[in-house]
Amino acid sequence: MVLQDLGKRLNTAINSLTQQSAIDEQALDAVLKSVCAALLESDVNVLLVKRLRDKVKGKVLPQLEEIQAKQGQDADAMQGNKAKQIIQKAIYDELVALVDPGDAAPPAFNPVKGKTQVIMMVGLQGAGKTTTCTKLATHYQRRGLKVALVCADTFRAGAFDQLKQNATKAKVPFFGSYTETDPVSISLQGVTKFRSERFDVIIVDTSGRHRQESELFDEMRQIQDAVEPNMVVLVLDGAIGQAAEAQSRAFKEASNFGAIIVTKLDGHAKGGGAISAVAATNTPIIFIGTGEHLHDLEKFSPQPFISKMLGMGDMQGLVERAQEMALANPERQEKMMKKLEKGEFTVRDLKDQLATVMGMCVAGSFLRSSRSTAFELLTGKCRAYAYRGPLSNLASMIPGMSEMMGGGGEEDVSRRMKRVAFIFDSMTTEELDSDGSLFRDSVPSAKGKEKEKDEEKDPSNPMGLREPNKRVLRVARGSGTSVQEVEELLAQHQMFAKMAKRMGGKNGLMGKLAARG
Ligand code: GDP
Image (spheres, rainbow, N blue to C red):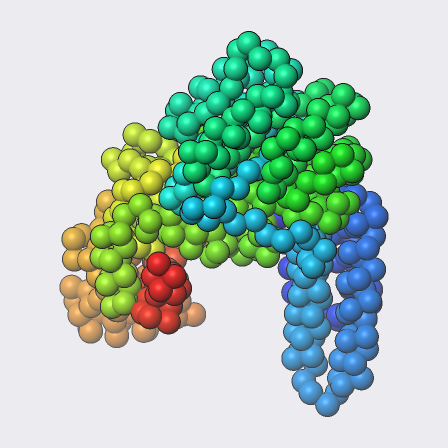
């Protein structure tokens, strides 16, 4: 089961509680059974799944008993809701714990300007090391650090050419050799050169093998002794399934890596196996690879990852993208701050943001805007940095956005985005520049109040069902969509407008971000 499907299955299992009338041990067992089945199908290690089930039960059962004892004192429904929340929270916390080594993790790695740090990448051939080296270099470069790459992979023919090509594309200085066959000597030469040139981050790409074998591990140890890296990173293919545990343990023994990057989580990788490597080695995942392109690298943090997987959005991810954007374009940041401080977010703002999100992912499609950041959704019209990932990736970072897009594959999402664009195209300038309230106010029809009175008595509408706002009706007809679609979009606008307000001002997220510089 791929990660997206796992998220949906977990979500359905957790939400199934809402339909249950009695919340007792039986209901808890039923939810846990579905959650565990979904995790096992995604290749999460069976012992970890069992541990999750036991921990949730251990946490929840005593609280359920307490609630049952109280029943009768308070309204049953209230106690039922409380029980559901307790179960949902316990499952969420244990899912987070699955991907969080907690205190056992080695200290976090945060390269800074003016202090050379060496990162050595290890992993089997094909895991995605060379690709990830350049992605990582780009990531640190975007944060204003001076980064260089060293190719110590002399095993795979063409490895240096690949790194050279990627590095040139990313405009990252590199070092390697076509003639030198000793990886230890090359890595030492490269690291010494870039150290003397005061680079902040030097990333060493080592060779892999098809299998774990002693030669590979000997070579890794020798390079490690020679270049004395500040951080060794294991690159794990997200698709390796249950083999991940043994593989990560073997690498841990040989190189004592301090962090993991899981690649290929964009495709059909189940991911659960690689995730189990965290528990097997007490080592955190620091990034995940979500595509073959330079920018397809996402920072990994346990809570946002689980929230995003469960369709709850990833505010932290959005803030990070905003931070990148702010670094790249301070004047835009200023403009956006002013807008947010005023708490403004018009319907046109939502239109523009969705257009750029779409433009980022499907360049040259129905909307003209080209490249920008995901965070434009909340912030303005900055064109500083291109996000080039699948549309659904981006949508999943924004709370409520995945529901708005209704999930599904790339084609479904982009089809729905087009319908949304048709809706905006059917709005008038006045409507677009409004805060959306025009669509909520009742708009008197041509016959005015008289008609409304008639409608009250309308025998064809004895239930007195609400008539859609006339503007909503017009927009739906004009765009060839339904009233429900238009109303959903307007509701989404309201949600973003509220979020924009919350993020604005000195105490909002954007204010804090600005304060951090
Ligand atoms: P190495 O042998 O470990 O250096 O692996 P490479 O960097 O050469 O990557 C092997 C293949 O995996 C290449 O075709 C990459 O384009 C691909 N790849 C690496 N990372 C990702 C990722 O996050 N997503 C996808 N879809 N492909 C990836």
